Length: 251
Image 1 (tube, rainbow, N blue to C red):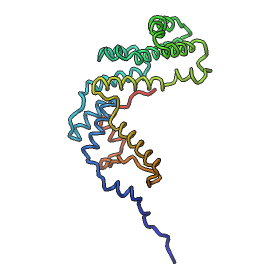
Image 2: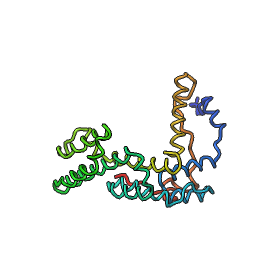
Image 3: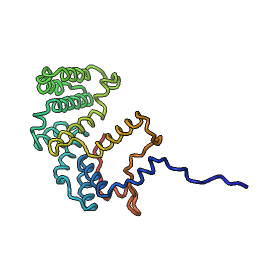
Image 4: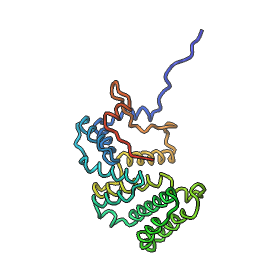
């Protein structure tokens, strides 16, 4: 009787070529440390730099301050985020009017959310909009449009909003603001707005797209190529815990 073939399928020539190119472990470790530093994970960055025998890219206090600002934004405490950011570097908001306005607009959203939950006293939201956003809105058409849309939240019940208004109450608005602030701080401190690995992934996606547009022969699916082995006897979650991996607040 014949048996079904169990031979391993032949690898694509491109995949065989990739296997011949080995990224130095130190380069991969440097990318990981850069990501932990830039994204704001101080405990993980400190422990990983020791484990990988790498010099820290920033002091833990600097990373922790960025994390603190992001967590304030994610939790809706925009006033504390602005105050902490100004303590860190007041020039950031002075120079970036759009970022400053977006934070103030988010603070107005949080005030409207709060007054809606506390029984309908809209006076604090109106006062804030008049004093903080009103003088800035006429300087930029987008500012004025954003302010008008935000004030519309006072006119409609929050459980029956059109998609544009509902988006203002979605956690994504906090997340986007936190990301923008983090990028602004990073650019001020290191002349880069994002982790190197993010840029690397974008470049890889661009190169693959260009290759396919040129009808080069590639496998149907390409892995990112940054796979690593799990530490012996440790699960991923255990390794994260040991490295002090502290995720940002996202609710």
